[in-house]
Amino acid sequence: MAGKPKSMDHYLEGLSDDKRAALEKLRKDIRAVAPGAVECIAWQMPCFRLDGKLLVAFGAAKAQCSL
Image 1 (tube, one colour):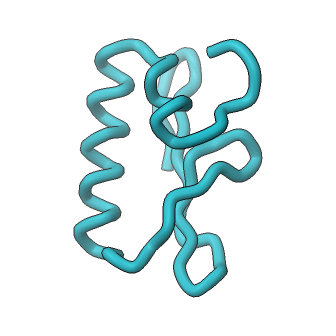
Image 2: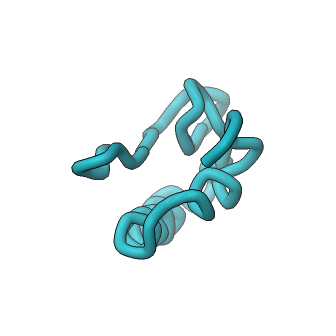
């Protein structure tokens, strides 16, 4: 991906198919267990905030995905 991600969708569209699929599933699971969480970008990574506090962040690197 070129440049800083502007949204979670923008971040994910720049990934390989396998990484995107893994992180989309993680995104879905986070939404299921924390329906009130809000998607955001922090430190150039997709994150979820709940009640104004960072709940979880995830990302992809060359050899792995992380939570």
